[in-house]
Image 1 (cartoon, rainbow, N blue to C red):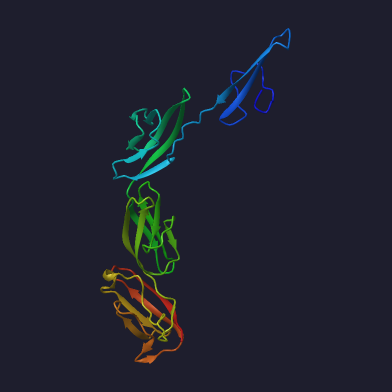
Image 2 (tube, one colour):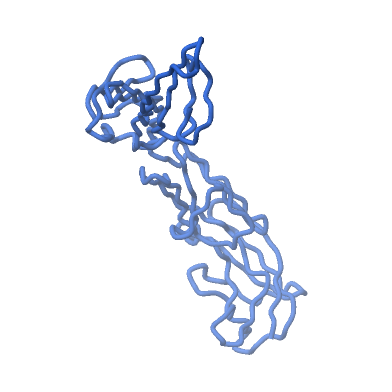
Length: 285
């Protein structure tokens, strides 16, 4: 019987599942088959040893340039075995230097109450290769996007301003301008960056001296593109109103010192790399 007086199988099976956690008292009564008045009683303690806990993570990450990662667990166990996926034993103590990427098996044992209890745990080491930008795909002139193509097998994130990062390598519907694009490893294993120019133009501007959209200028021209590029602005009848210096802050909406009215205006651009395009925009008063 158990502590509550509940009958247990007689005899107890070879494999017996205790009904109280870790420690249970088993009461035993043996009777003579010919007379129940002839009996003997005793009891014993059924003690269940806990499996030795293994306090390590299922996944570890290190940079590809790092030589190894040092792991350690409880040093009070009786035996330790750190095994790599190829079967090699890399340590038989409570600590190990993990070098190669792959799967590992850690097995420990502890002797308690004269019984050896063993526990095992598997974990994985990933080496993150330093990220490298292979290519930057982009479009401009109203179809603006940037897509960063990077090499490496790490967990990467991407940015086009060095401040705000995202998991996707695609940035759509962005304004024209010169961007420094970044890719970095989330585990801190390095980053790479490069510059890309997205040529575009404002669809409108408001030259009212409030500090916002007061000038019209082609965006996304780097210093090399600005050198020798030609920007011309016309009215709707084709009259040349302004030849812009691409290094200037832009057109202020004046012609011969006088403010031009709200209207649509046209432009042509010839870049020094052979590209040319034209379009129109709105001046709003």
